[in-house]
Image (cartoon, rainbow, N blue to C red; front, side):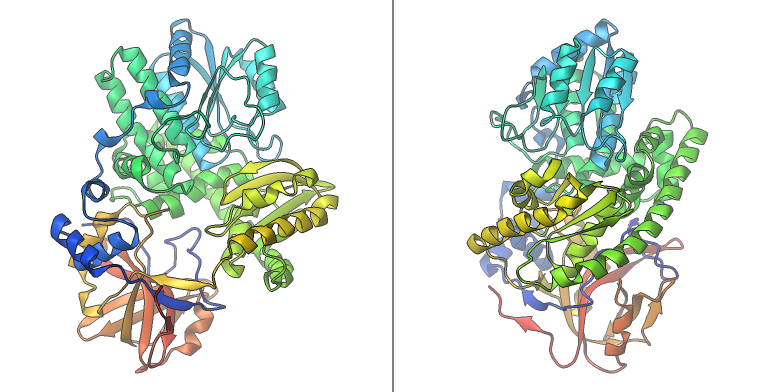
Length: 609
């Protein structure tokens, strides 16, 4: 069984953005202890290994039908798209526009979610012979979501309908202007609605509206666009069961939805798990020239795809276009008409991603130095830093790096003269958006999610925003304090059990992601099978070969090169890791991705909860 989760042993090129490590301020380890009776019941009823039963129990699963559905996703379990708010109104208007050859402008956004959802709908309208144009705003010139640029584009193409993807729920003023121009707006979105009035759109298809009765509210933007496409296909087919060509279109389109579902970090449960499971298969099997070219440039072609391939290979390349140039470059990949066009477009994305990594490295170093005092200050639960000329295309990634380093929410700003934009990332269980509400008077436009948000800011207001956000954060943490950092471990696994057959059992838990995290395992009392090696261009990573008895595995520890001094041949070594398949030069083996390590007689375990 070949997987594409590859880690090359010669040149750490598996990840564009390596997973955060725990090389400094090392946490204690805590072993989860699920109910033994629950574990045994899962083994008995679902035929899984003891380890997989533990993983299921740790993620809240009990024996029964929901767990069966989790282990074997079924397309029949997807919810009826017509249950979404305003879906019938939206589908009727779009069907009429197609019939009357009215121009439809699909209005996306510059992240992966907006790009993939836009592509999905444009491809559908092209398939249906509709008049369609598309628009992705510039991160630098236009900002997030709707604005004056939306009005200009709608007028330029002669749009009768503006159809949003992954935005629009809060765009009250712009949608009012579109209505005054005689243009209907249909919003498809998944963001939380504004605290005040909703826009005067013809339809707002959003599972998070207060009036929504949709059974699952955690869809990403591209998934909502997929639901609209499905509903429209039903409307055109005149039946719940859509005609064959449209059914095939929807199945193929789940590849785009899978990319967005993984990269937008929505919970991989319920419909999201189904869409991602089948979407990864559709992505690998797609014959579209752009898909094929993207798989070639990421060295994923011909392999079974996992969620991490999307998160660390495909997603960063799509995002690089919007971060450094225009996200329209990514749409061009997916809409490529032939192989040559697809390859050229995919190579452009790859080049932009290389530039993005270079920019990010330099800016992260500056931001780390600036953030250090706030990171160590208990009265600053949120880190806010920024600088002149900081590239606004990578500040979100840098914010994530600060979160990883200091275990605190972070807002990073890039200023160009007096004005700038910021990007926020948070820690689990803390809503950065709620904290930002307290600083509304200092910001221009702002919005987002509990875990990620953005805003416009004048540099002169940075200190005021810092005080307001941190004041609110302190109040929030008083009523809901965060515990000390602790590395939560799923199971203590004897190393002789970590073999290929066990890994094939773990594969039943795929796709992994938000809400269905990868297994984090502990194996104790190992030994180095050979001297550890520092690898990577700057020696920042560790490559180990570890053994216990006859079982030997390679283990890769990202960002831990300086910890090589902790290791010694013959000393007991305890590893916390995630197991995965490594395909390198055509051969597939089990390999370990290390989360933390400890040399000595006993690991730093603390009592379970």
